[in-house]
Image 1: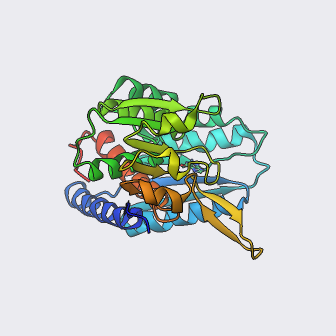
Image 2 (image 1 turned 45 degrees about the vertical axis):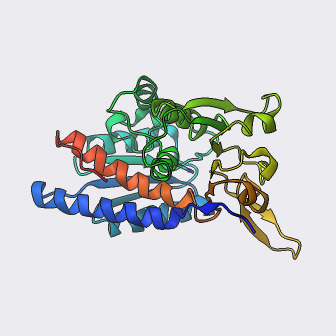
Length: 297
Ligand code: GUN
């Protein structure tokens, strides 16, 4: 049996949603307005439809306004840019999220680049990437790495300084922003990727190991330093022997659990934190746009 503490992302996310909801109540009392989040969905990818529906539901549950815009996969890039510009100009909209992936004929970067950086609750605009890189307190931070950071701070009682962190994966959505966040916490951070030499040995040096590569169960128990904290960002659907499928992370949970000090499960770890952090970012954006003190969440 494994010894690792299970980091309960589902419970953590529920707690964060509760704090967001309280912050929204305070803002409604003091300003008479509720933060608003606009989500734009292009095409009919089933996974994206589920995400967008969950975002809408949780936005309303937090007491915020939810605006959804659905477009066929054939929408032109110009028409989508017009939609984004209209949302930039709408004072009831404090946060804008364009669900990715977009169809091939649309340039993701052009669309993300059209979003007002102060409404970019995904934190994908180059202005927010730059703000995060220079340590500006005005950055909007990508939701998944922000969720990982909040759980790590909780696990370490805020004392992350001096820990060695290894991040496996260098994506713009997770690996790179996670690097900046952990560096800012004064961790010693290494970002590993597909060309890294002796990845298992490097991972074994980590007090904090973040797996975000999208390769099912790649990180094995013998890659983990005894007692390390393991954050599994992977969400992979793989075949089961009985012909069905199951969700698994980038970490081989049964062997990792024997060695790690704490680990996030899949599902129920990082995943639930992402939308909770999106709600948090929307409240943050609202406060900054109105020049209000940011509320603790
Ligand atoms: N598709 C999958 N994850 C995300 C996300 O965090 N933001 C956006 N905009 N699209 C996604």
